[in-house]
Length: 92
Image (cartoon, rainbow, N blue to C red; front, side, top):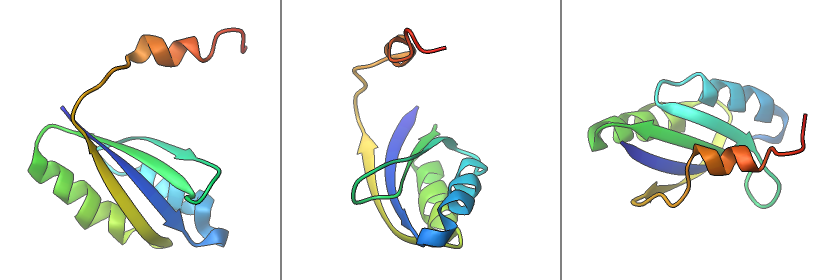
């Protein structure tokens, strides 16, 4: 499984719509709105490099309202679902 972290800037008045459109794409597992110098972070998980190119270049980059993207390909994971669940301890 290949994972890419895509940092996305979007037109300010279209951020919620862009986020939903990204989340609806096959291969996009999660989309987060974030603070800082980017607007959204999209996690892309696919099986083949060709699939990665299709999702990121052919689909994600063509979502109306996306103004800029920076893609980072992960080559090793140091966390698991258990770590993510740990961040939610005490929050109900």
